[in-house]
Image (cartoon, rainbow, N blue to C red; front, side, top):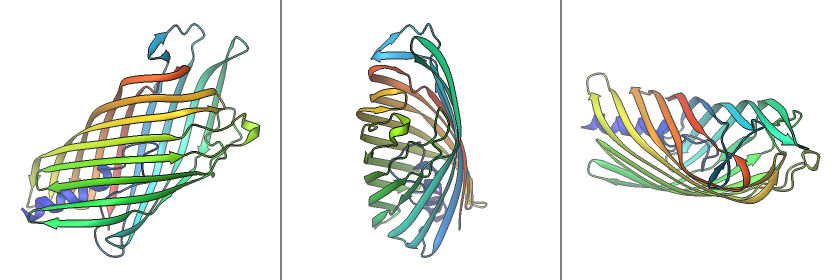
Length: 292
């Protein structure tokens, strides 16, 4: 039983941070000990050539699309179990087709994106065979992203985030709920960016542990992920922004001691856009994490 609970605790370091612009940088739970630390690398690929106006799919005669491949480098340090510092930075390779003056224009960009720092402050709740916590996390997104390409990976804005999380795990079941808000600042005027809309989001993960070998502390988690997003109307380099999106999909995670590997697939179940925009698209994530 004890080994299965330890497996839950280690698994959570890769379960929580599955999203590109998520509530906080990385690794919600592990490590649990004073002066513990962890690291993770994740690769996300998403894209679409579908275009919607509101919630209706519209014709796309000029071939508008967007494809984004992001590799996240992430880390966490626990001063004490209740106070941590997290950081992540993306390496982005992306391309798109936009419409300008009635003609299709191909654009691309690559480079390091914006650094995200977070300070999770936890209240741990311990009971027989279970562990839960409530976490308040202020976050800061720093404008380190490259803005030189025609499809820039950064927009030059400084953004502030705040999230409230509840998580509970027992030996075979994991649940995670997070409500967050990002206040997005104004970007560089040279990018024709006024202000990207602020974002409110909700994430939920539910998981089962169908297999665990107590002798080797090896097992497999099967998860289901739900993501809800609302972004206010704004302006970025491609035009107007603003969307409501509900995405969902499965995740499978293998672990052995303090090493974790996971794969996730997410599809949009519902999308509404302010004006004509390219769909968020399907997303595939592959990641590996380790804690010390």
